Image (cartoon, rainbow, N blue to C red; front, side, top):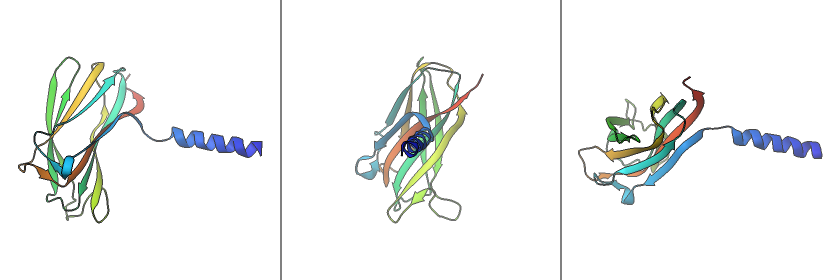
Length: 158
C-alpha cells in the first residue's frame, strides 16, 4: 500500500510540474462584449533576469457572431526607462475559407495567437503592455475577453 501511495505522489508531482511557466497570465473581460477605443487594456510584469527567453501570447474570446475575419490591435510595450515601442498586429480569427480559428462551439471561440517567440528583455524592472482595439468600428462588438501571457521558456540567451 505504501508503494502505491508513493507512486501516486510521484505521478502527481510530474503532472503538476509539466506545462507552461507563465510570469504573466492575466485576463481582462470586455464589458457588454463591446470593446471601445477608450478601453485600453494594461498588463504589467516585473522582469528580473534579462538573460531569460520568453514567449508572448495573446488569448482572445469572441462570439461566433463577430462580424470580421480579423481584428487589428495596437500593442504598446512600455519599458522600465519609459521608452515605448508600438506595433500594429492583425489577429487572424478565420482561415482562408472562412472557418473560425481556435477552439469554438456554437456561440463563442477561444483563440490563441503567438505575439513573439524567443523574446528577451534588455532591461530589468517593470514592463507594461498596453493593448488597444484598432478597427474602424467603435465600439467593436463580439469581443468577450483578452488575455496576455508571458511564458518563461526555461532557456537563456547566454
